[in-house]
Length: 75
Image (cartoon, rainbow, N blue to C red; front, side):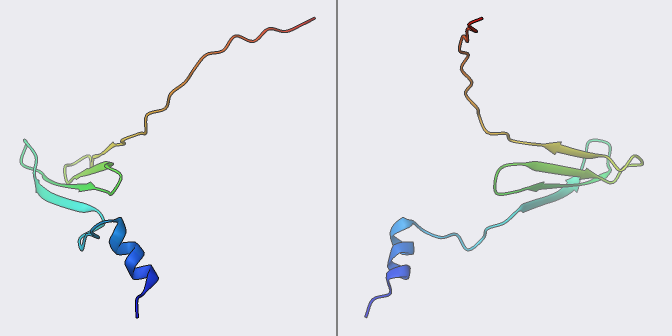
């Protein structure tokens, strides 16, 4: 007996066991602790444990194509 849902999932590709955000912890160039988090879409958030509690966010925006079109108005 076959499971249609299972067969469909297996035909799409290999499912990763590790999904979700990836976290890297370390120290920045000044010696302060920092934590970088990269999500599934490629956005990166870096939290710095410095006196300013700085947070850097790098957003990977999708490419959008825009076309200009001339519009005339009849009076």
